[in-house]
Length: 452
Image (cartoon, rainbow, N blue to C red; front, side, top):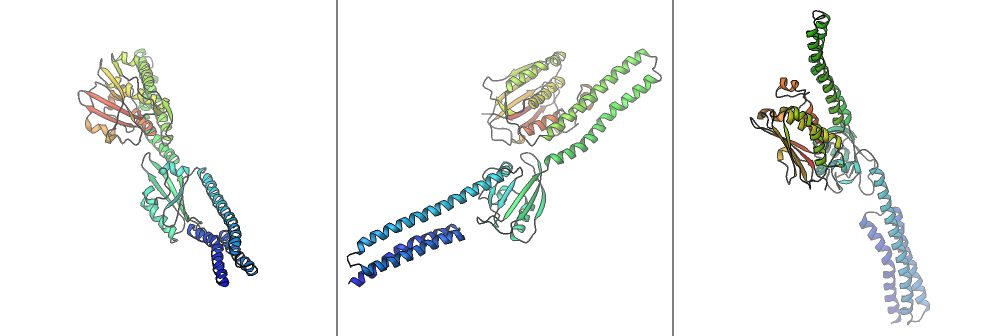
């Protein structure tokens, strides 16, 4: 009876002592983190269990039958201490690993170029701050195809992840929300990390350099085309003044006046080209400052009052008192409304009225391509001019496109005003719609994100 009691107690003690070490090893195996340090921690638990069992066996051999209850209490106390120490060690290791991961991610977030880390199944494990800004927030856990729908990049990433292809670099374009030109370098790690990261995608934004190249070519082509006519006219007038009209005071006065107009036209043209170039360079970086629309529009209308008086036109303003500010660049928005209101006065009916109506709306027309989630503020500028034929409307914001070339030049237009408006609104993540009815007038509506 005594031997059976000792054997049963020994079995219970060995089982109770072995549980901590086995539990540690099992938990680490399930967590997928059975590294050498972790294996040693679990092994220590099992060895301690064995020593405890042997010590208890020796104690039972020297003690009477009634002693197991007292010794069991002592053994349980020792086991609780061992378990607590192992739990502290495991918790400390987990916390250290989490701190290391946070530190690594903080370093990756400081990189200026977008970076995406994938496993071999092309699931996103981490995207740094630049990548989240480019492709959307919180991409971790999603497949790469849900973030970036570019067949060539996806095919290359799959080949690199499987080891079938070496590191590769691909050029790609992202059309929305603003057109971007990028290169993507895809490379696999020599050995996957413990959390499964095996592939890295690094993006480089080439938008600005590509735009500089295109603008240089466009400037040469457009400027040479538009400046050729006034230069030819200036050359002809100068030749005439130096020859047949040398002593003709009437002709000299008329020619000099025309020459001054041509010089003014070239000055406006060069100024608009430079303005357009500046806007295009910053188009991919949206502004973030609040701008009071009603104050801005009143200032523009006041500045253009002399032009309205020359055309005997009036300006009718409808600006609600509770109109919220918009997110934008005040100088660029002033240029937008100056262009549109000036056009409404110039091309509107002599002695007519220009209506300006601003309000907050719920939905932007689908054709406007509104990309934002903020409430839109709509500013409609309407004239009472002859109107524009429907076939011209889609091309009005193209560079140097004019419905009536002769009239536009006579009124001092360069053909770049609406192109500047379009690019400024693109930078502001806004939109523009144009509606016109022949014989009744034209309405330009600007949509800007409200700052709530």
